[in-house]
Length: 341
Image (cartoon, rainbow, N blue to C red; front, side):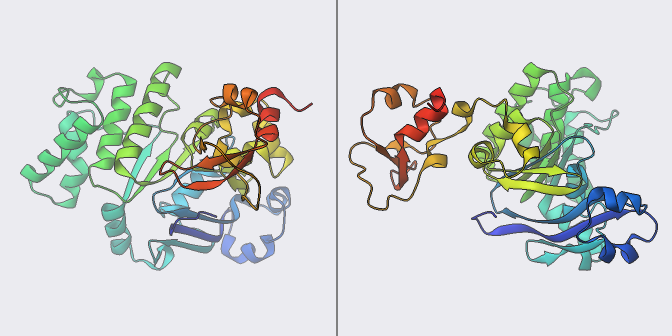
């Protein structure tokens, strides 16, 4: 559960594919994916309850066929759910008329997909301005806004280029700029970097983190790459057979996987690079926590030298503003760094 005010709430959401799924969904509740499949249905999303906090970056991940893309398409009502409820910024998506839904998407939602979907006969400027044109904005205003977001994603000077004249990473930047042009509150990204080579993918992740820091959007990001999820996410929801196996912070997923399936995702992760001081912070509860605090956003690896040389049993942990958030047990951090005795 997100601590921030929820902007998206999914409550017991189901998406079944098959003949008359609405008449079967009551029977599906409590059944496994295989039991539902043997009955002639595919449970693409299976009884999912999840919230996305305002300003949060939630990564939804899983292997191919796990249901992650279907869930996000349900969140934006690109497809209708079979059962359950999805509330977006206080509005029940399933109760909206087509006109109201289009209005909500145009005002509040930006979407970026794996295929860039650029219009080949339009240059960068016109591609980015296209959703504003569909919204009915006048030419001068949409050009001004398009130029603004083109600069934001680092493509200034390439406004007149056509998609065929751009690299894959540049084309993806155009797709990101186009989705940002409408100034969405909620940003859906479905494996936006998976078609890129590793070097460009890393650069795009860096660019994405920079934009995220500047813009403060609520983001739902789909990937099948666990390293990418760990690098980007506030929380990660891991899906299997249409259901969410675990939804938690990267630190907690790595330290305390809820299921055997989640454990397999985390078993090869170098925990010291992922686990932060805030993930190990416990309530102070009378522990002696004298001396300087360690930063909450520092990883165990970044604190390695201090942990080895330190003699205090508990180290105070402070956020960026200097406020104490708890105390970290030094031995627990050393066990992550060096392996338990």
